[in-house]
View 1 (cartoon, rainbow, N blue to C red):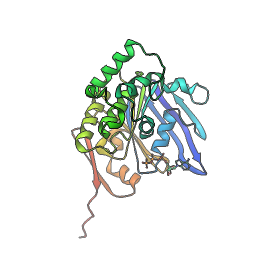
View 2: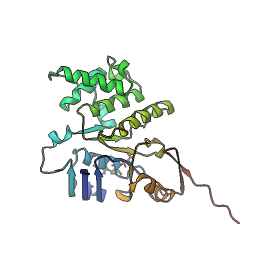
View 3: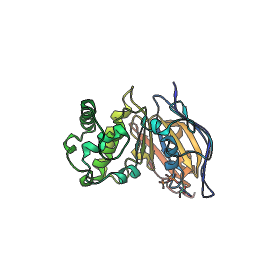
View 4: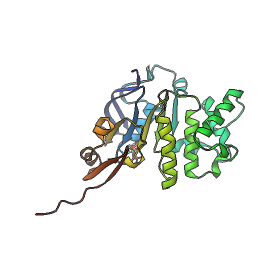
Amino acid sequence: MSAVFDLTDVTVIRSGKTLLDSITWSVRTGEHWVVIGPNGAGKTTLLQILGASLHPTSGRVEILEETLGSVDVFELRTRIGHTSTSVAERIPPRESVRNVVLSAAYAVIGRWHEEYDDEDFTRVEQLLAELGISQLSDRTFGTLSEGEKKRVLIARALMTDPEAVLLDEPGAGLDLGAREDLLASLDVLSGDPDGAALVLVTHHVEEIPAGFTHALVLGEGRVVAQGPLDEVLTSQTLSRAFGQRLEVTQDRGRFTARRAPAARRA
Ligand SMILES: Nc1ncnc2c1ncn2[C@@H]1O[C@H](COP(=O)(O)OP(=O)(O)OP(=O)(O)O)[C@@H](O)[C@H]1O
């Protein structure tokens, strides 16, 4: 299996603060990783590195077998799908859903004078259908609910048939039904044996889709644990990362976490 992402001793320092501290981590083809950790742990910073939109202060980053620092990042970014609130915020509210997805073919936000062919339009319709949002294609992005926006962003991230997809808190702000719909869409993505490698950032173990295989737990910019999901998402590891006694349970491929009950005195 080849490496989709390969980080060696990656450190990011900004304004004298260490955001990521000596991260060594590999994501291989066919793996789907969840990155979990408390607020400020460095998750979004890590995703920016994977998306080739941030260079580390030190360390080596290989993305799709190209070394960051000696590759055209604009070219590289078209091979990586990225969904995040910062992408959503840059989309003009009057842009149609169809154009939000279509314009990803040129790695631009919003349609301008780019030329698209029939294949591009067919791909958009196919992706909207896969995500169950065909009926939204003529709507403007600004009129969508949070859950609908999240799915449009995933369709956009898949437009270039990327080799990797980065999902930064896709479940944030969704109600229970919308979260479950989103998880069902992500289950389909993670179940495709020829699909892209997925890296999903979340604060909540309840938002981990069933087909995910590995977890990286971050705390204060450092790796607390990494490896196969079942081995890493334990009460012990998450308690360490979140600084409180947590109880993690798993039922039919889905995780839940809650504060552990206080020990009874004898
Ligand atoms: N340019 C910067 N200068 C100084 N500190 C920064 C800078 N950018 C981010 N930080 C800090 O780095 C830490 C990590 O930020 P990051 O957004 O990666 O964390 P996160 O795990 O995604 O957090 P959250 O779960 O709250 O979204 C935070 O404490 C943040 O305030």
